[in-house]
Amino acid sequence: MKFIRSLFLMGFAMSALCSAAMAQGSATRDERYRIGFQDVIDVKVFRHPELDVRAPVNPDGRIYLYRLAKPLVAVCKTERELADDIVAAYKVSYLRDPQVTVTVAEQKSQSMAVIGAVEKPGSFFVGRELNLLQLIAMAGGPSKDAGTRVLVVRVGSNSDCKTDDDSKEQPGLMTFKIRDLQEGKENLEMRPGDVVSVLKSDIIYVYGNVKKPGPVEVREPITLTQAIASAEGYTNATDKDTVRILRQKPDSLDREEIIVNLSDIEKRKAADPYLQPNDIVALSKDNTKAILTGIGTAFKNGIPLLMSRGIPGL
Image (tube, rainbow, N blue to C red; front, side, top):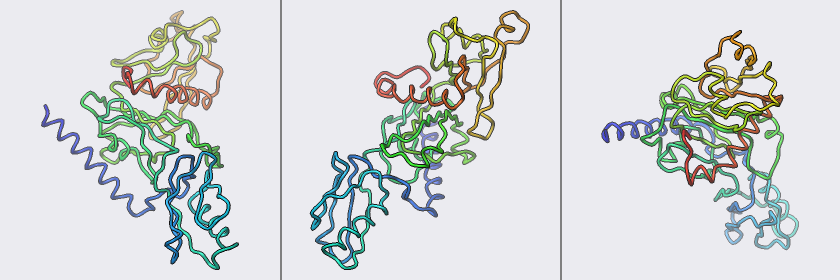
């Protein structure tokens, strides 16, 4: 058994290495990354090594540099934008034509988390482009009690900087098969703030007017009414004529909306549909984006508890 387990981990690691090698043709750093509080910045000035410095971003969002009377705002700027500001500042009083390079040496403001059935769950601060397979490998790969799927929760960056790209980013609860990741059939470019959970079993979410909203662990086929019962039943505020199932489309991050009449099911006028892994049962008037954001935010807020105690299936 240990031998088979070792082969599995070796195969996962090799898949991650291959994925990393394939990405070598592109930039290794994410030029869109915006500097945050607690980050550490390397500043190098060509032919002026006396000005080179490694500087932390202070609580006020600024950095202090040699020969400059005033600190410069660093937070929420890209490496290139900060370098341009430093060039302009040195031109004023010290250098004629400075050439400045800025690099984020330590990225401490924005993280990605890996929880669930992995060898080394935790938060990871990564200052380069990274895909899902590589991030799971950083967490030691799936553990012996891992199931077949990985869940990615995306509700937006945990940065204090808001950009146009952030407004275009759609929240999501996305599942991927571990085997498809290993075989290169699927992958996902990670974003700061993403949470990855290697699941022990499949999960279905019940959202809205139920007594205990949240994830439902699924180890065998489950119907709509069984999922609602697992959430301890619906409340009086439920519109039973328009219960929605939000289902991830095949080979897509989007979801389709399936309208179900719960009243007809209870009266046996309609069949009780079976649910699929990662379905969301919505007993609410909220739109899909609000539902995904709500579930994702609740999930992220519970990470410290998940990492300290664990939760079935996550």
